[in-house]
Length: 198
Image: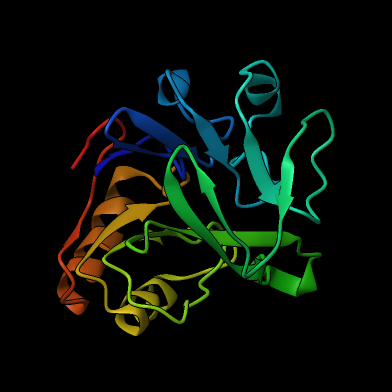
């Protein structure tokens, strides 16, 4: 499976001419969606879903059943739901966005495990009850800190981990977060710049 990271939380997964894109938000590059067969959206925040771009795309979009995404038609899914998109087996896990400072209202947030191997948690540090080969770990957000990201990787124990949710930190901050994740986790952590694939 080829994984390409785009800006912020957007990730493109390709296998045998099948393409699924997760969280193409307003900061991600339009190229992420070229030839996409389906889109998975973890939650309703604009940094994870670009409604105008997706509304005109003409491919199936899946999002939490409780998500409030005006102007976008999508198939609602719930935690524990297993389904297939573009021949990828998908399991929805979690359920709520991580708490934000001061008890700010949260929203529905689902993580997605694809082909029992790759896990994208959206804006949550939910630990699924299954082994994960490749973890897409949030690196920064108003709802988290670096210690939380490190603990998340250690709790899941993936074979490899790549940062997502990183568009709001400058290069110095990103270097620091990447350094801590690489040093404190023994899980093949590596940073992928937008457009880089593995």
